[in-house]
Image (cartoon, rainbow, N blue to C red; front, side):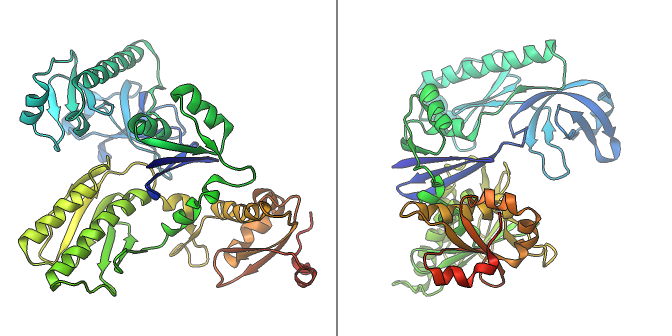
Length: 470
């Protein structure tokens, strides 16, 4: 059973649950105007030969940058020249978006590039594809890359998608030739639309917290949605928020008693597998294989949920038999089979280390949940203040279901004192405490926050000094 949960706020948050277990998580930053896959008609503003880079105005706050791989072409670029580019990497910090001239449009079955001929995903064989689908008719002006999903698809659906993408591409080129930049010519569809496009047949239940979202689903897809109860955040009501919080924890427990430890560094992601109390029933090699296979499945899930990318190094439990080592790599590839950002896995080294690579798209999940700790000068991470406020509001909203409680004791870690005291009115509004009596206290060593409803007079009397005055 596949369920989709949609929560609207500053960010749109989407979670897919498969058979009750969280399988995918997406967060859309509405303030980020350019996403990977967007196509712009830009204007060259500056050339920096020392960096082999061209800076392009695409109509956003920061200029995008284009890295010129062919140094012989660098002088061909002129300031003021129009350039058709596609966003490869979104804006991050002070850096503008990274763009490329190699524009493309992708669908479920094919990807189109300017050019001619055909190419095939590494996961399907050319001969097997042609034997199943027959020879393909060239698409005038475009090269067609057949994706893995095209192999089992009906030929008429593949052909229909090719024609749709060609029409869209023709329109983009026409607007680029007749229009003036900088301007956006094509916007990648939202995560919500992409999920509905790719998983339409699988979805069985949709939950939303916004009437506008419910109306959008009905008008555009003919899909009904269940609306979350008033006064409760959808993710909190269905227990998803607690699952997201667990994704901050570097340690992940496995069903058989072992665990993973996931560490994110500047250079790479490092994952260690520990057998812990698990001993197994077979010999040492069989026990190691069983543990590693279970770990591989959970690693794929955790990497996708946390949106980890770049180089991922995994320290598996030692195995010596070649057939077991090969079986583990095969299992890892299968575990990542449905992840569109997964690039490649490499065979185990002599030290039982496996290297993976995964493309970067968007921010890792921790970007939306954590911020650098000011007390340790950024060496550690604490819960993001804006996110913490939502959790406090959720805790207060949870008690509204049963009985109307007006008094709440809110404890925040000392590290949040300056944020809260800077604007106590905004703090009360953010936690839904404007019509309640909030007793705010700052503590240390008790966790980022705690919320306790106050129902007895003696509780209220003891905390009177911490009452926030409206």
